[in-house]
Amino acid sequence: MQDIIFKHTLPVQLRFNDIDALGHVNNSIYFTFYDLGKARYFEEVKRSPINWNDADLVIANINANFLLPVFMHEKIAVQTATISIGNKSLKVAQRIINIETKEIKATCETVLVGFDVKTSSAKEISDAWREAISFYEERDFSKNSQTRPE
Image (cartoon, rainbow, N blue to C red; front, side):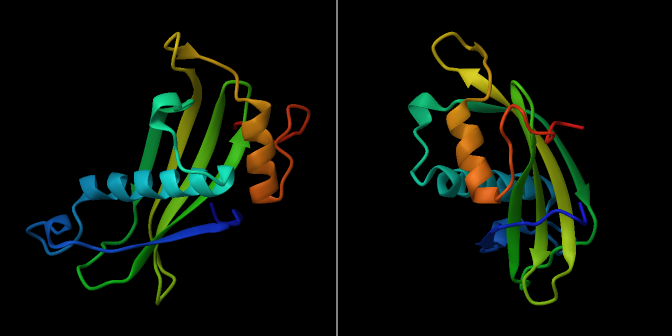
């Protein structure tokens, strides 16, 4: 995850109820941060709000690594980038950083699958998504590119 260029950064405000008995952010809360980061990332990529009635990507897998604890008064942000696109899925990398120290607190990789709401089945990642992500990330994610899932 070291060589990934994160073009999208979303500051996150910590709330009192995010903190557990040990004084740090509870591990279940990180997934809320990641979801918020993905939602804002895809809105920025598509340059429009998410239409929840026509959501065409669903999460198939999430892998998270908790590296350092996040404490109540830290200023943190979620960074998000698309790292690969296959035929029916794409992979997004995310990390939570301390804005002031630049320490990486946690990392996450999510596989999202193209989804047809009408048939409730997997579908290919559309050319529109590929073009929008390619433009935003300044990388070639077209079907002919070598940018494929690992």
